[in-house]
Length: 147
Image (cartoon, rainbow, N blue to C red):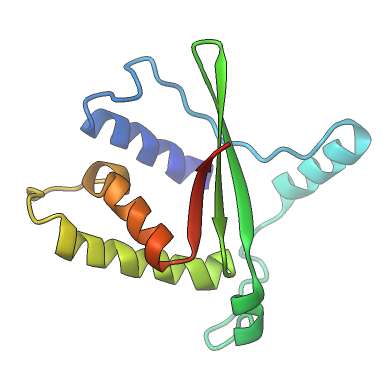
């Protein structure tokens, strides 16, 4: 998702008057470890096509699999020679469970809590920001934590 996320994050920074700074840099990577094992994992990921075995319409994970899935992400940043770590966890399969809840909560947030928003093309951060984070924590099984 790095090509999409990078553009989205830089647009958010610009729309929010460079809240992250005008010299803000963003990079996204998947850490695989060190040595031959890490290199083999990275090579495998770089050569695979994530859509090669995509489910056909009507296929996909079972309800049990969706409801029993979960995820735990760690975001690391460096700011003025200091590091910051933020975790995001979700209580369901990220692709089928959490995504639908995130989309629904975003729509409800826009309708109920962003009536002062002017027209245009926004990102989630610039249009909903902490309002959406609160909705996701309260209603969608996500947690956001400063580590």
